[in-house]
Amino acid sequence: MVSLKNLFEDNPLSARWVVEGFWNRQDEVDWALDLLTGEDDFEKVCVIHGHTRTGKSHFALRVLADPRLRACGVRSFAVNANNQGTARNVFESLLFALHRAVLELPSSPSMQPSLDALREELADARFLLEDGRAERVDDEVAEASAELGAPSFKVPGLEVALPARAAEKAVRGRKVVTRPLSDRGMAELVAAAADAIRQAEGLRTVLLFIDDLDLLDREGAEGGAGVDTVVDLLRPIADREGLCVVATTRRQYFNGREKDFIDLGALRPLKPEELTKVYALRVKLFNDGREIFSPGALSLLTRTADGRVGVFLRHCREVFRLHRRQEPMPFAEEVVRRYIVDRVQELLEDPAHRALMREVIECVRALRLEFQPAQDPARTGMLHVVLNPVPGRAGWYAVNPLFAEVLRDASEIT
Image 1 (tube, rainbow, N blue to C red):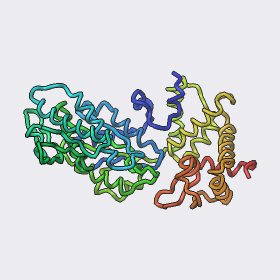
Image 2 (spheres, one colour; image 1 turned 90 degrees about the horizontal axis):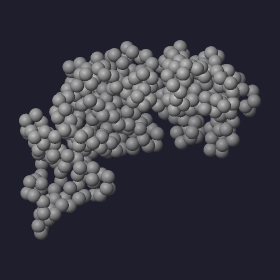
Image 3 (spheres, rainbow, N blue to C red; image 1 turned 90 degrees about the vertical axis):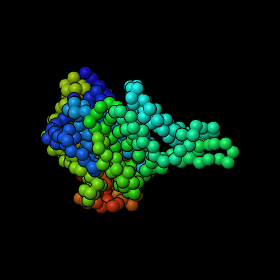
Image 4 (cartoon, helix red, strand yellow; image 1 turned 60 degrees about the vertical axis):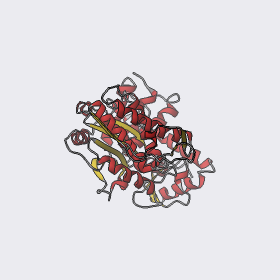
């Protein structure tokens, strides 16, 4: 088949292709699955970690899509923390996903009282979150609904403990004031919903997957207090029997936090020959096996990707997108070099990027690939394209090796 969408997609492929379109890392996949299908309760957050653009998200989804998990009675729910901004937003996303699943649970006379109570609690929480109200006031409610505390509903086959809802009585008549849950209350409700799904469906484990956990900050910073808050709220969920929490993070956030995390998978950079096999699989699946790049062009792209499959696929996609109607395929190495030269010229002509691009050129010509730029790349289109953050060195950035190699040889760029 031919699929321009999937050919060089550098984000995780759709569910249809997430397993078939994944190349190798079989040892890492087997290790993660052996852990997740074992009989242990983890008590900590299980983390898949690696450098930026090394394929952590696709790897995690490949593991979660493996039939061995479902065969062992594991059901997963996934959210992406990237750019969510706050811990609360992450738990809202989890809450909404679990609410949909709770509504779809089959009716059962023995479980119905507990499920009805849980559905009511989830509906109240969603109503206030989606409506943006500070509170909801119900008049003339039944006596039971005004009770405070965290009721536990026990019926054959299902036990659900719900977090307390704030309530108060008015002077005239009876009223219940329902306010949005605190962050911890939301985490407790997420755990209650996940546990109810586990019990109602007879599962061994409900797994909650949080992708890009350390990229919560909307300003682009990695890690930070907001991420630590999410981890603190996830720990009690991971500690509950029958619940498991899996997350992806950058390696620098994982390091030094062993007390909070279990190492589910460390993704190393891929070698050039391994990236070549990724390319061959994509061409086979999504271009009827027809080559896009010549051996020379492919060698340039693989050896300058720094082992990061996301970087490699992005460059492949951009060269293909811009030149597929202009140049014969398979593309020669010169086509790839011209793509980089054109991209640099565009950045030099753009007032928002000109000064930063000049700094990059000066550093490359001085045989330096890491520097502290005067302009913050996080607010430009050059981050993760021309420049990458240097792990462990705040404010330092490394020039992408493909740009560095072409710039060293491109005499036409001055």
